[in-house]
Image 1 (cartoon, rainbow, N blue to C red):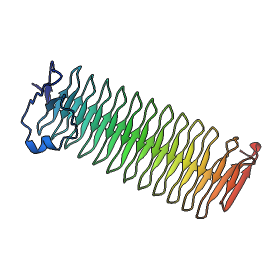
Image 2: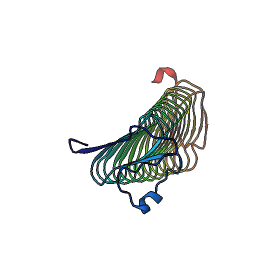
Image 3: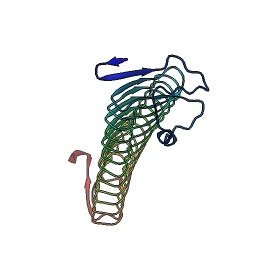
Image 4: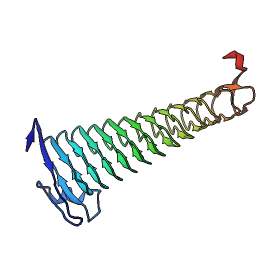
Length: 273
């Protein structure tokens, strides 16, 4: 069925051990599929722009070419975008979503999901549940959502936002922007000149390599600058620990903060803000 410029492909009912191949997929493409559960049915698109809709069971959905819209609906699904600018929604269940080539928009929905953007400028959103999100190659925008999430940017310049609970954020190999949000988070910049912002609760912030800027935010935080000329803002009224590391580092801190290996230190009273 054609809807606008999209071809809609849907399976009405799927037996647990069935395999429904709706369009022709080559054996080579089937072998490269990272979804290996033999109980999954398979819904495959075309080289055009498709709408792929799942069911209440768990399926494999593969977009192939074109700019696809994929909605896995319920069940523990595995979805691949293929080439093109794809929109993939996991829905209800513990899903695995793969953007593959080109820019993609992946949203996990509810459940404990795994999202991998792979190539291109990707948007990843975990949603509800404890999710794992990896941007892959290309600059990415990654948001954990509501849950204890793990976010990793990959090799390019990424923006990572933890969300509402206790999250782990890893920047990777370029200049990254990281925001812990609420919860007791762990932020690690990795290589590159990164900006780390702790957010609202007590966080652990690790700059890594490069000239980093680290803002603790509220809560009782701990800071590690790593190598490079870092700028650390720890003046928030809480007693905190700051270890600058190698390089020529600058720190703005409270009078009660414990500071080590920092070259330029500015201690503030509360009335100095």
